[in-house]
Amino acid sequence: MKRFHLAAIPALALLFTAFITTTETADHHRGASENIVELAVGNENLSTLVAAVQAADFVELLSSEGPFTVFAPTNEAFEALPDGTLEMLLMPENIEMLQSILALHVVPGKVMSGDLSDGMSAESANGKDLTFSIGYGGASVNGSDIIMTDIEASNGVVHVIDTVILPETAASSY
Image (cartoon, rainbow, N blue to C red; front, top):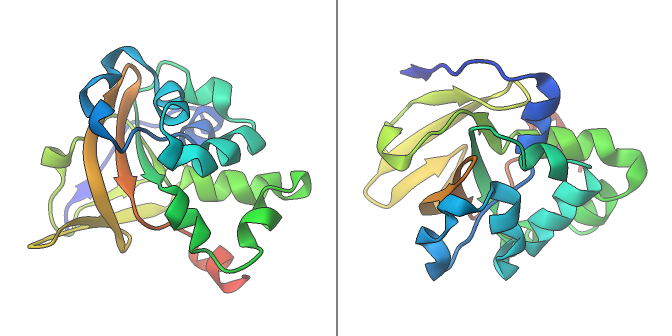
């Protein structure tokens, strides 16, 4: 198994990166002048992610220089969570749990789809490993299919995914 090692970014910046994501439409190539947050705000299919980033108080950081790689769950991915989960995570008293989950979706540095290989792992912003699979059906990260790749932003890149990645401990508590 290959290990993709990225330089550490201050912990707070890492957490912020976990919460923004990009466009899933034909705007695919417009992003180079917009940061990750601006791309997400401009895509209605990522509105739930934007709400989570705002609730986690990560907007400023995700607008920072980076670079970051964000695996952005769609609205449908959030809707597929067990009933009441999203509402619970958006409550102010659960901000740390929300930040931890969002940080799983961010990798420090810029990782393009061409950089991925089957079995490769990368450390997310919260310190947990993400594992990539490459097959005939495409690529996935921790079992979540990557449905759109390489959406470039001024501070990194976004890959849209079809499932919210949950930490093992968090998944068992829902």
